[in-house]
Amino acid sequence: MAENKITATQKFDASAEKVFAAWTEFEQLKQWWKPLGKTLIKMDQSEGSNDVAYHFSDGDSSDGDMMVKSEYEKIEENKHLVYSWNWYLNDAPVKDGLYKLDVEFSDTDGGSEISVTQSNESEEEGVHPHSQGWDDALKELKDFVENH
Image 1 (tube, rainbow, N blue to C red):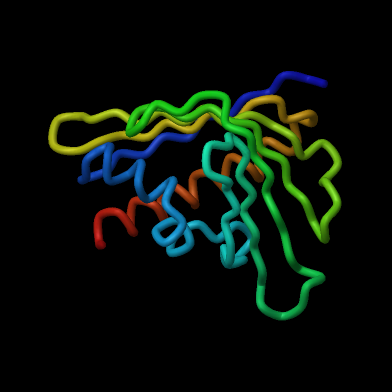
Image 2: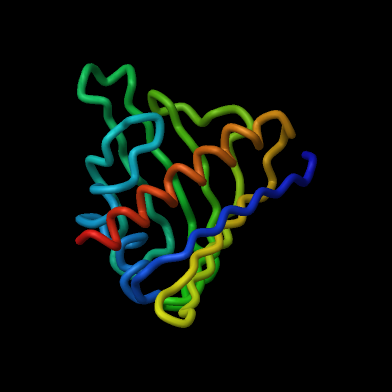
């Protein structure tokens, strides 16, 4: 597998603690994270487990349902998350859809910044849509955090 990385960053007029909560808490996450226009409908995480699954739907039929399965490698509250990430469409893993996310939250003068690095993308051509997806998602996160 080729090692490819993309990094997206965003500044916020809000604390790193507030941005971290919007990134990790279901009730906040579902309000801004809508990959491919789908709605986050459920987040499964067992108490004491590092595994989490995010379930998405477009509401039209179960044929459009997606899921992301993740396993946390590092959790540093309000500062740093490292976890694996694998997309599933209709309960089947997406070919070459496994990668790692490294997400850093830092306070800055008057606000905060987030840096998201995605690695282990197997085909370089696939990086460009992911890069645009992260840029769009972080803009949605900024809008949500600064207006709620």
